[in-house]
Image (cartoon, rainbow, N blue to C red):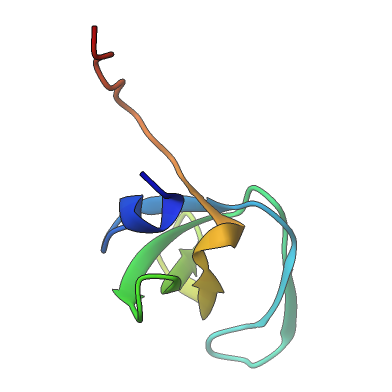
Length: 83
């Protein structure tokens, strides 16, 4: 299964590389670092996803399209191995 097909709406993801962005409200330049955590809020063609990045207060500071190859899903429960 490819990484593209694993990404779904509302998945919590992390960036695999630094990404330049602009602040959602102020339009100031931002550098989102590798490991920055966001949530998928829209899917385009299954390879590009709109990701919202928000602070601990829940307020979004960046929303931008990110290619699936630049994202990894963050998991909090294990999958059972197939014997």
